Length: 617
Image (cartoon, rainbow, N blue to C red; front, top):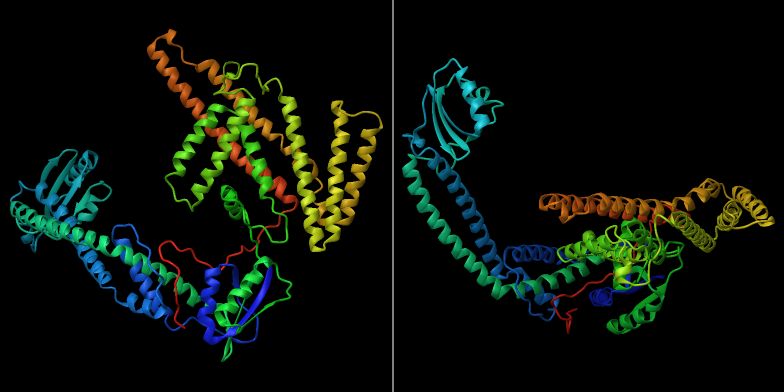
């Protein structure tokens, strides 16, 4: 990655910026030169205002197929974007539509009151008195009981009217103005009805006639508006969508000027670019400016942005890595190790064909119903791979919802047994931990060496020696080594620890982790074995049996499914959490700094419009 400076004439700015935007290969940065700051073009505000209005209009009409249009020259685009007649029409109709819907809601509320009090001979428009106050409420059975009790305890004369409607009772109350109505209904649970609301006027029968006539008028007009908006959508959606995309592109180009420096005649921009793209950059800029441009590579001591280019199938893992912390450009990319190890950890901890298939079907269903750019989608794609790993290890361990079925599906293949081979599995997981921790320390050595931190680099090597020779020494306890080898290994391991402490105080604080972190990988065996034992117990005590009768069979079937579902959820949760933890805590802590800066090229992606043929300058 190289940092470059581009110097060009002010008159070529639009052409240069457009070319860079189309290329999409440079990450623009603010120049540190002691020059005046540039700023967006004067028309930037017009672009922004027009874009907001058009995007708002697009949200108010139905989506339609879009026919791509040629990207308009800037002057023509500004002219067309200022006054698209359909936009004003859309906003006008949508505003009227909103008012009508609010009016229909008010009519519905008033109708509810009119129907509730249809038997009450009262004119709601004349509820005015110097002595009496009028209120209306609705209450369920519990609130009604409390309300009656509260009213009975009041010393004033209160007139009430009750109207029942299914589970709700409507109450109309007339009482002396001196009575504190709020205190009377406080904590009773009754809900007051607004007798001053729109259309609550006149006698209930008259109200109903007015309401129904007005609702018919509003509904008719609402249908007309919806029809008109539908027609506008069919005729104008494509044109507005194209305009929106063109405006977005031009606004980004105009706003990019805030990153530039300038003099009276030239402007200056800086940014990061991949080394292999330099020749293409120079050629393209020279072409649009007729050679009136200078591009130079800058010397710097800055940390370059991180640029990754992984296959599409691995993008979800990149999303998760960035969610954790973006790697620095000067450190080894651990994503491939993460991609390989995470499924293995998860697969061993879940390790059941049935659970794997069930979770695979579930996440596939979810992934097809969420935003492909969001966290949920990316998590689902990772989970799909995890589910395949669970199926694979389920076959190897002969687990099908806790049952052993390999002899029926794969004759002659038994696989390993969690209960019989628990010690072996634990040993293998610890060995796996040692390998991954050593690999992490080796990455740390490379990273520190490349940065010139020689003491830290050497301390990583001595830490590796401490782990490897310490593991050889401990292996004697299990009869794997004998003679002088364990003693010699123990001596080398202790010496390596002492050298590590002497060379690097920071690395010395990690000495205890050299022992605990590899052992931490034994949790893979623990959670995997726990899931298998729980599944075995469920099968042993709750497998349905028709011989016990249909009711007992159904009851046991429900319990069987529920318990396996809960065990599957527990296994999935632990598999994900512990698999992520082993990578991000135990492995990454040996070398990964993170907090890098992502490479964000100045670019755009056309969805509708076609490349412009000619630009105005």
